[in-house]
Length: 248
Ligand SMILES: Cc1ncc(C[n+]2csc(CCOP(=O)(O)OP(=O)(O)O)c2C)c(N)n1
Image (tube, rainbow, N blue to C red; front, side, top):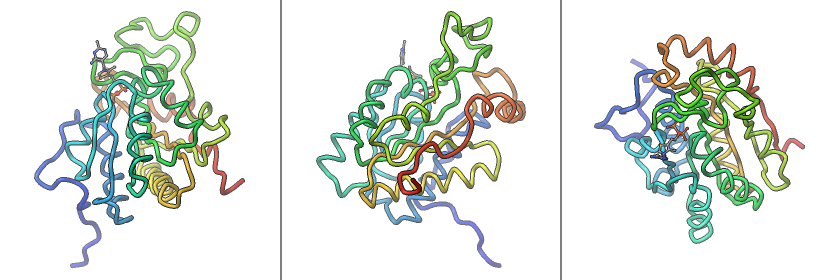
């Protein structure tokens, strides 16, 4: 029989994962593992993980990694990449971590044009800490800190990180993709691969936002997260390439 799919070598074999059922962090981790295999970079990689659920991918991806708490992943990645430029270094961060606590770090790493990639998983809520409002929470979306729904008069509007990062001079590639459908997952993998290839080619700073879900803290079934993403999240956060210096 023809083998059409193989578990990526960059995923630890004995373990499944410990994400909540239906959580798309596992999909993102698997795509990264596949790309590390395809680029032959597993042994040469250092992943900088965040605080939050995304850090658990460090338990399943078989590559060197470090956890940089509270949004400091871009600063940590800067130090690692500058002292070991031959390594493939990238951050993997959630929206509370990157767009709130670590907003200064991400903007300044992008503005410096550091030669690494950032994978930003936007599930529009703080997952691990129990569903508090994130900068990316949608208008009207309920969270434990906005039980009546986010009110932009008092809590501000959802922050669009691709738009902000792409407005800076130095980033070379900025794209927003999603993890909700097979077609979107294929496109997400291409974006991950392009960002890592940019780094290998020393082109500079790449930023890929991966739109995701959080069934547990959105308070709905896994199935219900898919129409919510299609009808609400992806309308607020349109998919697409926000910057590609190669195409310019
Ligand atoms: C009181 C308190 N403040 C801050 C933290 C740090 N912290 C741990 S997980 C987390 C949420 C991260 O949310 P996000 O970045 O959206 O990632 P997700 O878990 O949704 O993937 C925070 C802020 C903490 N553990 N306790």
